[in-house]
Length: 272
Length: 349
Image 1 (tube, rainbow over the protein chains, first blue to last red):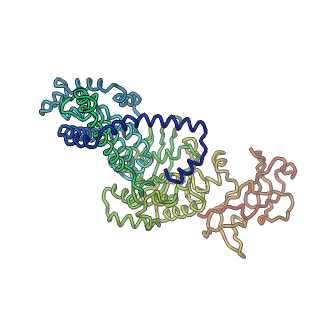
Image 2: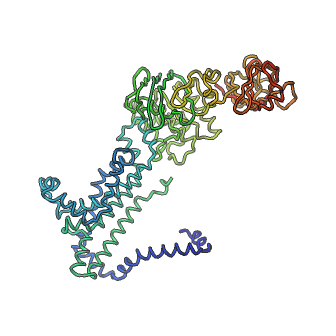
């Protein structure tokens, strides 16, 4: 808020309703900040530093980041064109299809893990295909990535679909009449114009994948991603040992999130 | 030459019914109709964005009804320009060039040549968001013309620009046409049709109701719809001349004084029927145009009576029934018609 805005805000007399809404807002904010702040305050920089130097912790954080990134990038190849289809075409049972996309968000993630386990286990089609090239999804980063993608892909599809829907169809039609093929129209018009939304979707999917616990723990307890490591430390050693890892993971997630958001932010000369 | 033969297409709640017309090479063809009459649909069908249910489209003898959009050789300029916002003006022009099967010239050079032709050379590195409506329209035109289309389709190109810009763009379109470009221009504005078109087709409810030269269609509207839609009553082909500092338009035996800034001497004039004042005797007023004539017929209309009189040319005046009664207007009566120079609207050819 600019200082002039603050001054103006201070000058206006608050009505009782303003007070009520401000109070509820403050309570909600407090509800989010208080537990996190409490955890941060209870962790000294020295314990944080010690935790960060543990190989197990470092490996798990690195594993979490790259599996989620890989899942996001790999599945974006299919999710983005699918989002375009959803934004542009009408087809029978479109409502049903949109509902199916949202399913991973609403089902319990441990249940999603159980479902996925059957899908990638050694006697499933996918499991057998994996075995043929020496890949066993259970307890493997590939399995972790699949579990992460399953629960986070709706975020990418929905955000990218909104982005494509916001691209005026006339521009695509104009490109077609200028002789561009449908593929060229997609890559040179639709994709660049929906890019900001797509990037937001990618960031959301990546962030959601990194924070996944329920589905991943069923497919792969080991190698341990950080959410599983936190859970394990809590179960085996208690709150005190789980806290520094949690703080470290939150800090790194936040840093990445802020970095990506900054990268996705429109440059001042692009705003118009 | 572009020919549409019995093009029909059903949309939910609307249909094109056996639309046929021919645009000859070098024509400036106007498709005139109210909004929702199916004009834009016709353009999109010609461009290939919409496939017709039946009928055929021929361009220079080549059947293109089901031809790919990209291979039709047709340029379409949309009403809202559809200039790509994420590319510079240069990027927009080059986009069109890259799609051509073989580029004879250097693309940068071709873009510059076209930009110069449409006076947008100084805008080449600018992003569309920084351009005015008129500049965007020029960019859209340049981007389409750079492909040297067999026919240029324009969808309401002057609909969303102010008066000043309108005459500027009209002059530009006239110039493009003069340079040999065949144009099919869709509009709801009969003034555009008169000032630009060499031929006009009027479309109503998905059907072509009349087609002909601009003069034929407006002078002899074949249906009430055409006459009523345009609302044109006193429409004359004229030759301008300047005498003693006054501009006169001659049509048949009659000379009408008017005010115009146009320099071209050949054109049309329109005088709204509401602007004609009738009297039984000559009167002294500030109006400069006075003609005596004989009433040929009096027809009741929605807003009073339409009085047609022969004063060497046929004038139609709109008066209220009360005035008609007070003046005692009867067919065969001799009356005077008066109107101001400013009531005369001139459109050059």
